[in-house]
Every structure is written in structure tokens, then in C-alpha cells.
Image (cartoon, rainbow, N blue to C red; front, side, top):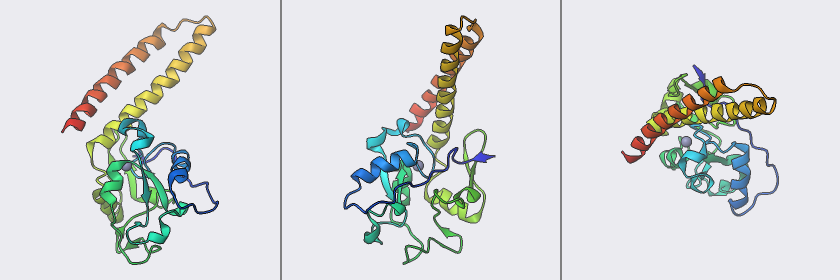
Length: 201
Ligand SMILES: [Zn+2]
């Protein structure tokens, strides 16, 4: 089992509260590394920055006073944001869990005690609360696993390409690395076909 997110996000903005989330979204994309706070999908695979949402941890429908409060905001994919919607277990924005029902902020360490990921990419709940979050956010969707793998291959390709360029400039043989790179390209295409199929369903 591995961490559900490779990098734990943290909010860096502590300035004044704006009456729009336009600037907040620009801050969120950096703080969350372009990844959905909950499922970790990289935004590249879901239409990029413009398609991602500013998610309100304590829903704005119940707590309109927190609509622009940066500490309450997350960068989220449309799937997690729409699935979570205005669900909240209490009438208090600070009470986010009651009897294993509720949500955890992925900027807090506790999130990572309840949800993990298999090496193969599937998200797995570790506790009852994790199970609640898993089902309410639909973290079981195949796309999260496919995107995890697509992105893992893409990162490896980028690293390999860098190494190939470096070795080439040193006059070294890069045949083996080029073969490995081609294999990664084939693997990427295979996952992309599965992803495309999943998007059509
Ligand atoms: Zn998501």
C-alpha cells in the first residue's frame, strides 16, 4: 500500500479574504500542485486548470460566510467536487465528523490515515470513516486508477528523456534508454486507450 497522494498539500495563503475566488484558484493550483485534493488526479487529464473547481470543504450552501475563506478552499477535480456537493454531517463548520460520517481535509495529516492506494493505483479505504469518504466522493471510479498510472508513466518518461539528453550530450550510448522510453510510450498508449474507453462509458 502507498500514500493516496504523493505530495501532501498545504495552504500557503494567509492574507486578506477576497470577495471572489478568482485569485484564490490561482493560489490553490500551486498549493495543490495541479492535483485534486481528494483523489490526486492531475488536472491535465480532466481539461486542465479551467475545468477544475474551487471546492469548499465546509459547503458554501450551509456556510456562506466561508465562501472565500482560503483555509476552507481546496483544488478539486469535477468528479470529487460534484460527488461531495453540499454533504456535511453537522450544522457546525468545525464539526466535520460524527460517528464515522463526514469528511477530512487533505491538508490535514489525518486524511492519510483513512485512505491509501494500492501499488496498482486503486484507492482503498482503511477505516469506516475512510469508507464513507470513499463512497461519497466516488473514489472507486476507474478513472482515478487510470489517471494515476498515466501520470506515473508520464513522469517516468520525462525523467528518462532528461537522462537520455544528458547522456547524449556526454557522448554516451543511449540505445538501452531509448528502448525503455519506447516501451513506456507503448504502455502510456495502452492506458490512454483504457482511459478513453472509460470516458466514453
Ligand atoms: Zn478528485
